[in-house]
Amino acid sequence: MKQGNLNAKNVKNVKKYIWKKKLIQVLKRIEQPDDNDYLIEALKIYPFIKKESFDIVLQHLQGKINLAKTGKKLTVAEKKYFGINPRLSVTNSLVNVLTDLGLKETKPREVLSNILNIARRKQYIKNSITRFIEADIKQFTLLSVDDERECSWCKLNANTKMSVTIDINKLIKENCTCKEGSRLALQAVVRF
Ligand SMILES: [Zn+2]
Image 1 (spheres, helix red, strand yellow):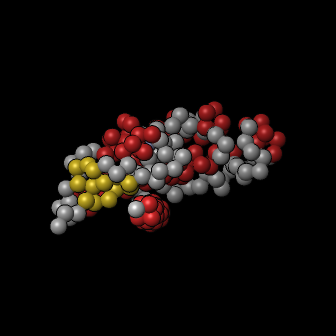
Image 2 (image 1 turned 90 degrees about the vertical axis):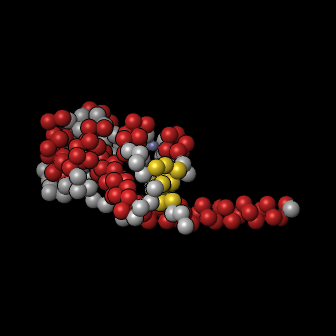
């Protein structure tokens, strides 16, 4: 009996490991946002970017310019002044778009990549729901990465079944406090 329980637990762990690997693959090939609204919305989530710099940061997020490569590189003394890790390569073009709070982040380039990730995930959710509806799928399950970077709301909603008619992006916007945006993935509930 004890052996049986152990095996069942092992099977569960193996299954968890497999879908976690799958989930990471899904997150890696997440769609580039084609919807500017997602980028603008993600820009507004954090108080890390100066309002007057939204346009230029938008161009960076769309890949039209690269703020990490334009302008001049900060000297060690300048980085120390801003409290940035002196070993990081940071340009003045990047520093110029950040608010004081943004500058306090340990990796300034990550501030921008997090914004892009938030927009990408919203795009991924929108595209997933569109695909589900096209395939006449009525429900989906939320899959969670379940690590220390995930907020309590995301953890709580892992494995929850939801109707495709629910505006999951809105729910995430109102409840999720993950620093880099929710990393929940959607899996279709297929009925035979
Ligand atoms: Zn979250």
